Image (cartoon, rainbow, N blue to C red; front, top):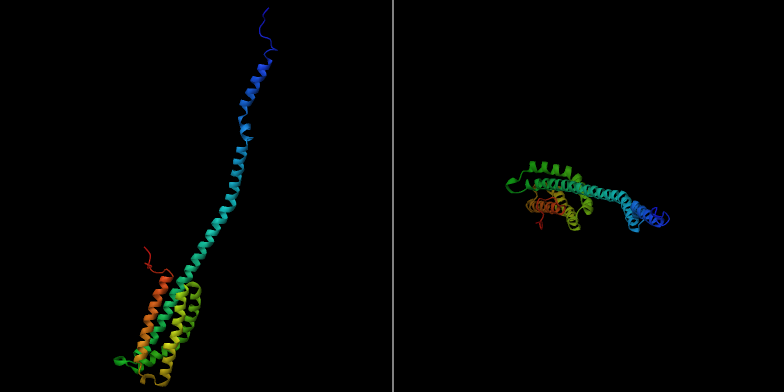
Amino acid sequence: MTTGSSPVAGAPENRLQAGNNSDKRNPVIAVLASESFLEKAYLLVLTVLLTGVVVPLVVKSIDASRERRAAISSAQQKLFDELSETILTYETLALDVSWFGTGSSRNPELQARAFQRYNDKTVDLTARLRILAARSRTLTSPDVGEKINMMLRDIFVQQDTPMLAMWNSCREKCDWEAQHLQNEMMTGRANDLIGQLAVDLGLVANVPGDP
């Protein structure tokens, strides 16, 4: 008599089907347990940690570098302004002294006034030049820094010392022609030095060699 399939005979097939269904229902578990997933997860966590630590440090370093460059640039601009003003003020005062003792411009009264102005301001101006020359050693190229110091030295040797000696010995009676030519030469040299300093500090519109 046939009453249908035996439940015992069908049991193994049912168990196999149940097992297959169990594997199909848990693909997430299989992925999570895989080595490749664990490696990727580790790398992701590591990347997040490094991003949170390294990026702020890099940004901080960049900001510090920008601030340093800005401070140097500001100091260089100040050096240029003060040096050019101080040196040209000195040269103008020196030129006035010798100018009123030469040729058709000779005027003892005006020369005496010019010398008084020169004498009153020279100490402060030369002291200021010494300070600026010292600063230039750290803010300019070695070549320009040396030229500034040579200019300061020659101001004393070729202008201040001989003019004081002439005024103390003969004043308006001296022949100021040669000294005036010397003062004009030093004024031209001062202008050249200011131009070289501007180029050295990148303060000109068109730097030689730039495209």
